[in-house]
Image 1 (cartoon, rainbow, N blue to C red):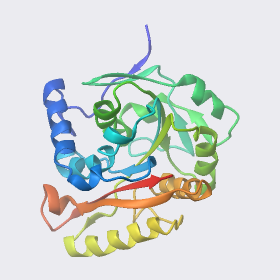
Image 2: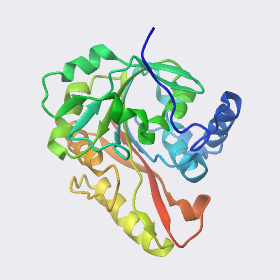
Image 3: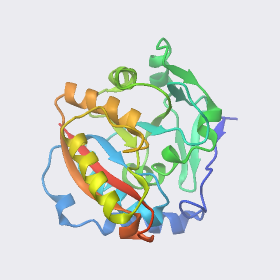
Length: 266
């Protein structure tokens, strides 16, 4: 029997019933305006948020809506990086299981591609780092809804640096068959007006390829910083898709969390 990483936050961050989950995701994607259907170069790398869908699902959808029209030729592999929230990780942790499960089905791990990282000292194998981690899991239903069948290269990013992440991404870069997704929220628990100012400044730094973000600016800063180095090296161009916070979606204004969606296009 294959070893499976079962969903840890179904029923909390998103619906546990498959029909309800698919309807919610499809609803978010349907609500994206006509700008998403405009002609743009293909997205190679996406930054998307990872909060509960009530808070950040609409923002994440602005990134994943691009895949509905740009995955021809088909994307067959998704390299997914997200920050460690539950288990302290030194550098990057790869999963050892055979598949990740969500209410929408199983996503097989691309073991052959993960094995390309075997000689890199900044990569370890740890199912424990993945078991309760939501930052990767919440991206999967959107990917399943937009791509259908694909293989997954999941990496939890911990205490590391931009160069270490960039080296990993270079190994995994691939061609049109490979999509890279960086999971990150922005500022946490600032008052609404302050958060808008801080998050706007952070996004402008990302759009300028400033690979010096800190955890106060983005919880996925290590993955973003490395991705910025790789994206710049490959000549990608960033495009801001959405920038809001929980005060705009489903929360109060006293303590908000910031979210953005950014596409890096060839």
